[in-house]
Amino acid sequence: MRFAAVLNKDGGTLRTTDVAAFADRVRELLEAAGHSVQIDIVAGGEIATALEKAIARRNVDVVLAGGGDGTVSTAASLLMNKKKALAILPAGTMNLFARSLGIPQTLEAALKALTDGEVKAVDMATANGRPFVHQFSIGMHARMVQLREKMDFGSRLGKMRASVRAAWATIKNPRTLKVTLTIGKTDIITRATGIGISNNLFGEGHLPYADNPAGGVLGIYVSVARRRRDLVKLLLAMLRGRWRQSEHVEIHQADKAVLKIHSSPTKFKAVMDGELVKLERETTVEIHPATLNVLVPRSSAQAKAA
Image (cartoon, rainbow, N blue to C red; front, side):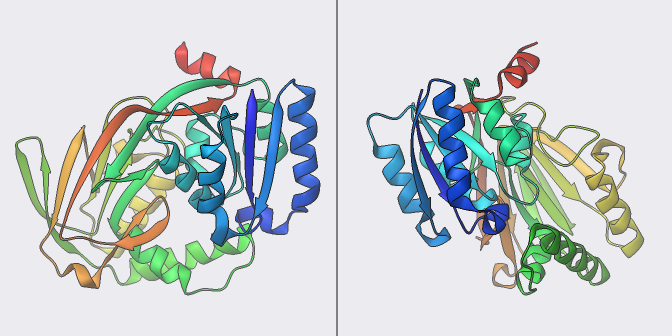
């Protein structure tokens, strides 16, 4: 296959990696497996433009995106409904979409696994037309990200520590939003501490990511916990993948959901694939089956097919 690799030197663990040496390793392994590759190393502010140029090349089958969750989400958005496939070198903190695809979590292992990978189609989702690969959320998660962004951290471990501090600060002073959630013909009117809508249902027994990225449904998670101890229990259940066992979250699934905010949206933000975005008064979230081609490890593709 013909690869175009775009490496974000400011993205995740690549910030502390000798990116030039790693680019040589990318070339070495791909060419040894019979592939060809063009490699661009760019700064974070240049990543979208570099990905657009890579996608526009005619002699490319696979766009290899190396960076954090923002880099991966941008690449997936640009490749939605295109024939070219996305390959991921996960350098983020959680790498949840990469986990969903069965991609190993170290750069070297991921690269080796993709050298004999195969292409499969998976789902994308949109919020008011804007694509995402993992989750759109409001409430606690968005507040936590807002607080974390104000903290200083220079490494993956530092970001994880900042996330813990931000989560505790959010739990100590929880905010609620009055919302109407429309699923099919049903209107759910509630005051929630958080709502997350995921691209396919989260699996059980692990971090929140989809076991089946081609399941064709949105996962809709509504937090009804308000007391501090209940919010702590919910957070622990989420981290352990025990969503369905928690009494503090309501779970739904659908191919479309409409979220109407009755609280002042100017006081709140939303999070899409880990990035803060403006919270609109009304947001329509939809699943789009089989709209993204991805390169996955052959063992992962065979296991999911089975």
